Length: 136
Image (cartoon, rainbow, N blue to C red; front, side, top):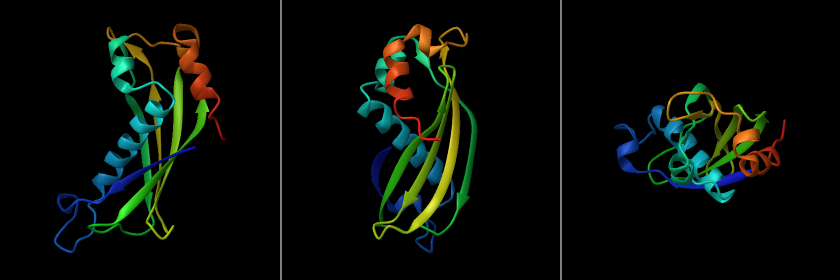
């Protein structure tokens, strides 16, 4: 598990100071990028190697609202990884620990030509680092 902190910006809110729902998906991406960087696999590094990782599915459940000036924590959990498909779960909590949002995302891995990559074969170090994080 990895935890990423984000300070809610004014532009992420509506006139009531409530975070617009689309921003939770952005925070999931920020947390995913941070998670991989902490494993030593920055997105830039992967792209330089010719690896892209498109989102194939995304889902979210809103529990409570974040507000302007809150600091939220986004925890990332790897729920499944077979080298081709990566499944992640996210939990967003406020600074008091209240659960605000639960989401999931699924990703595949491809080369620049759009061919599916098996990261276990193509990049065994990446596979080992991510597989070690699996928490079903």
